[in-house]
Each structure stands twice: as structure tokens, then as C-alpha cells.
Image (tube, rainbow, N blue to C red):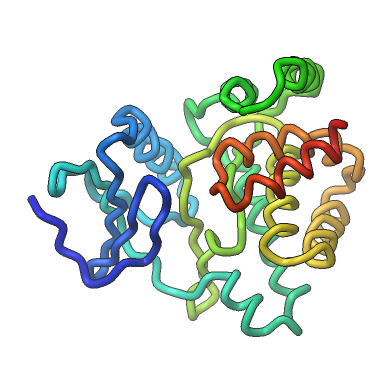
Length: 250
């Protein structure tokens, strides 16, 4: 079958996302791991089974010789767009954002990959000195485990708000089970890069105010969050995450 789409929504290094009416096609490059593609769809199906609002996976198919995941189109507006268009409402948007993230943490999803296993893989793939990788692994396995459901890429562009108060969350590629403070650290770093320090700090203050957790609980995961993002980031973002890694693990 060939790709039949109305327009391109997003272009990534190894995939292109198209809209086709009420559906979305995520089309992967031929070199992309077939196992990872099917695992991504499986992960989202596991979240869907919890009843949490996600766009439903419709099928996986080959289009023009490339694997593609087809899902429902999420009607609404992303929180990122709202934050950019109405910065005066930033606190209320971040308040909603933290509520949704905490709801994700509480989900009882089945058979998710373990956070520490995925992070250890990322550390192994990172282009870093061997001594630095060893120190990161030591820190990883010294930190407490957890049983929260972690989105892995919880940023405002992945939260879509509907017109009647509903919402859904996109992109469950990196979902795992583990300690929620690493997921919070990952969100903090991405807000810092995409927006500014004030926005990132406001997000973290709102989250900590709701949970009663200590800032240090999140900071001790910051270097691990930075290396996870370093492995996945675009070349233009690499300098930022290297700087943050050195800041939190000199």
C-alpha cells in the first residue's frame, strides 16, 4: 500500500507523522527496528487498557515498504501551543500539566519495561568516557526503585486539550515502570530547553507542592535524565544535555 495522507504533522530524524482525516500515520524509516515499532504500539495498547485517555491504535501496516502505526487523530490543542499563545496563563496550564502527570504515575499498566533496564541501555549507548558511564550506572542502581507508570517524554506538546475539558496524552514510545522522580527530572530538563528556567522551576515547584516530595528527590535523578535525553536528542540539542549532565555529575 502507498501513503495516503492530507498533510505532514511532524518530521523527526527517523520517522514522519502524517494526518489522514480522522487518523494519524507514523511512518518509520526502513532502518528503524521492527521490534521497536511493534513494542511502541504494544506499550500504547497497555496504557489504553487502563482506561486512560490516549488515541487508540488502529493497526500496523507497511506503506511504500515502510512500517507505519495508524492511530486516531487527537482533536484539540496542545498545551505547548496554549503556553506560547497565552503566556499570562502559564501557571494554570502547568497546574493542569502536573495533575495529568501525577495521574499517569498512578496507572496500573501491565508488563511495562523496567525503568532501570532502559536507562542502563541508554547509558551504554551514550558517547561518553567509560569512567563517566560507570559512575552513571553506579548512581542508577544506588537510587530507589519504584512502581509508577512513567511516560518518558511528558512535555506540553504531548498533552492535547479538548474543547469540552477533556484531554489525551500522545507518544508512549518511552513508557516504563519505575521511580517517578526521574520522569519529573526529564520533564524539567525539557521545559528548561524548550521554554526557560522560570517555566521549568514553576513546574517543579507546583509538582513538589502537590506531592510533598523534596527537591533533592528529583535532583538526584537529574544526571540520569540528562543522559537519557542525550541519547535520544537531535544533534542541535546535544550541547545542552551534555552541559546539564556535567552540571549534575561533574
